[in-house]
Length: 551
Image (cartoon, rainbow, N blue to C red; front, side, top):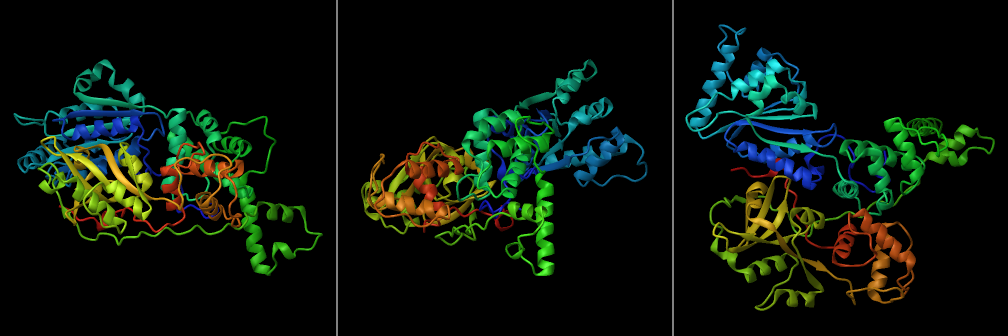
């Protein structure tokens, strides 16, 4: 209901485990690394545990999208099974044909599985079995799983098993009767809740992925309260923020305040804040509002035309009806998407041409329609009102900036290699080398990428590096105009000074984009402002899985 009201493209706080919304905190990154290690760990068990709603399943979905092509994967999400039912399910997941002569014997299924694993190993394939909610497994079933890891050749075990579950799983595996299984765990990781700082970054990250273009409806000042109410558990954060946005929408407010947040916590978690007077729950208020709209449509009567003797309930309906907000400015890519790309194996030596940084810079400038001569690229682009932005913050910032970048890689010999990144999905990337598009997996690219990159950004007229209170000029006029456009306000007066009201607008915008809300108008703030207002700049071409060429 509130998506259009807050200028969003989709629901930012759905509890569905969508990998696009995965916030890669240090904890989540480490958890994903453990799962990826398990693929090549040589068999045995990998253990991932965490509290309810900590993000285990979302990490697992992200892991599934990055599994190498030479892996067979079985995924069991309902582990409340007997040992025989488990074996049947495993064979079904791996599409194994089973001898139907004796389907009541565990040996029938184990023999079929063993044949499949040996054949897969002979074909150079790995087999990975993932069991979610593994804390529900019985001791008998866990022992059967341990026996499956006995299937092996002289060189390696044939089946890798990943157990994902709540903290009770660790307690279960600590029991003396399961010590043999516990000794076969080659990697284990417990996914903790988010810190207060990470909670704020998590909220702003999800809003940014959902396409927020205006001021964040969840101010930075509320983040400590959100963390306290949710204990930093991502699912609880999603539930709370979703209900809080619904509440702000129902009251026609542009942002959530402490009163609305406390009310949302009471509805979602059952906690009551005695300092907050009881209000009509938003779900009922919205039901009444929507009911009022339906009745009005049926009788051709609008709220504005109701007589003054209308009932109090009709007045309440008008009060919760959200105001009309201006439509967001569409952001259009300046360069046509790449449709066909050649798969590139980065584990082999990168092309020799990638060691030429000058050639790589020319490719980057071309994305902005600029042709560079010999010499310092970052000096030349200034003539076209562009600047270089140098960073070492990796893919997270690249996704945030959403523009082509020049990656500083290391080839297999450790030498520098420079390639142009023009497209990015959850699992793959488009690179442009010598003007030709190539496709690589993010997993392979990460082996050569340490986070260093360069991109370009467009500066306003008469741009100055630091803006101070009382400053006036064309750059201040441009800043005020862009922010007014985003916030649906009338165009400001020209030559107005940079004062407290404009600085607060800058801080609100920075907060909405997950930036430090310091009021300083630096490169990242201007880049995000250009993006939000639809400036004619090149963008990354997000590759949908269905459109992605495969090896």
